[in-house]
Amino acid sequence: MKIAIVGYGRMGHLIEEIAKERGHKIVCIIDADNTDDFDSHAFKSADVAIEFTTPGTAVDNILAAFAAKVPVVVGTTGWTNSLPDIQDMCEKGSGTLMWASNFSIGVNLFMAFNRYVAKVMNDFPEYAPSMTEIHHIHKLDHPSGTAITLAEEIVEEVTRIDQWEEPQPGKETPNHILPVDHVREGEIPGTHIIKWDSEADTITLTHEAKSRRGFAVGAVMAAEWLKGKKGFFTIGDMLSDVTHTQGLFV
Image (cartoon, rainbow, N blue to C red; front, side, top):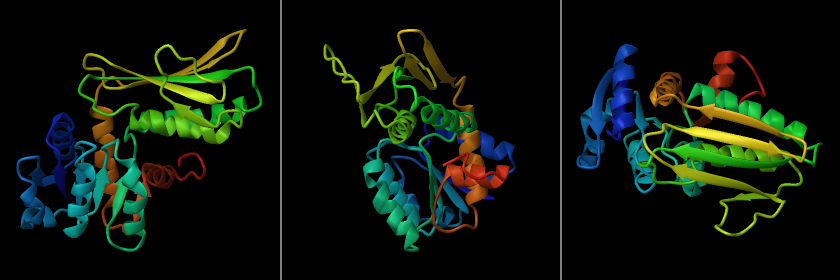
């Protein structure tokens, strides 16, 4: 298939490498200095575009892809305040998009585990949840999109928790709030740690990415699945389809 890459940083280069390994053709690469190429024949010839850029540019890139009638897989996080409007456009036929806070297959399995554990822990009020996410120093947004998704799933399943927030220095987080902390150091691809703490013991769920390759492979797989479809999709739609399961992924 023909793939356009939007955002040519580390992820963009890795997506290019993996797409070629899987037999695809890269027909257009757009970065900050050539956004006019959204109007090019090369970009418009793409079956799917894969977008990994920055929170401040993602929405404009999505709208440019929609205008060119190119479906787009979006891995950028930090822009989800605009997600309802983009989803509405897709549902009205103005574009096609797959969005995920994280395209790693392992992370999405981790999210399924998180939802299950949260449902169980709803009946054990002696356990208090907390979360920490660790990423490289180049990541601009915090907490990570993945951490936000994980946190929202806990809030949805645990009745004693009604919201999440980032801890404030020197201020204790109330029991009804899930604290979601962040650390930025080195070149860490991404680690998410969920703790359920009680006086008796602590239960910990951890996902640690070894490299960015898992994110890129998942994004290319998403592009393969999205080709020829119309509307708004999540990676849960793809995983439910390819694994022939219902209710495990969302």
